[in-house]
Image: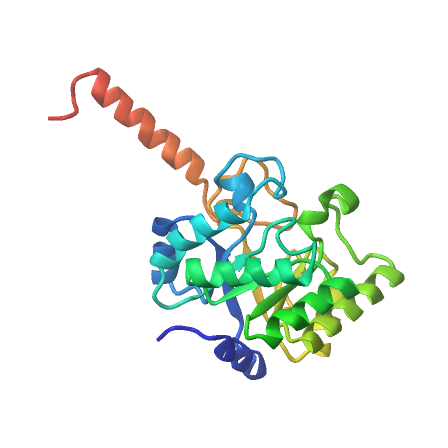
Length: 258
């Protein structure tokens, strides 16, 4: 049975932890879905993982839709959420509605995710949810703000922590169905998780969130560099390299095809 937003919110009330990973193509999405992942995020991290950029900023709305379509075709059970990329929703509410509507219509995903908790973003979330577009929020480290915030942990001072708490509460009030908490102290994430009634999904935010998400390339050991809060469960880069070298040797020594 396909997982819904209402199911995720029910799991928060029941204390059942939500498991999430990212995907950027059909094959990976199919594997994750069959493995029982609850929420698959077509994150704009694909700008780096799949497209070779150094940040998330260059990826376009059209590229996100292209990858989201492929991911959605591989999924039967998980809820699929797609990031709105940089400058596809910040200019105006009408731009955000157009971009989010285009993603839902063309990619067939269940919801969109946007970054930030400023009053302007809160208003955008409220306008989107008012017309029936489900929105996942994202506070703490927001990669689309890399040139302003960098990649360091956020919320370490009392002022920063209070701001992030206020943003999370405002996102819930605006209609967000869940919130990503990225690279913030575990105590702060625990406070937010207790304050809001919608699920919190942590990435580098401690164990007290309602769920956890990782970039799948990090989990599989495919990334060039691992964020300080990530964990590799195997070194797939090494496994693939070894298999390719074995194939090359067999071809060169006329052992393949037999």
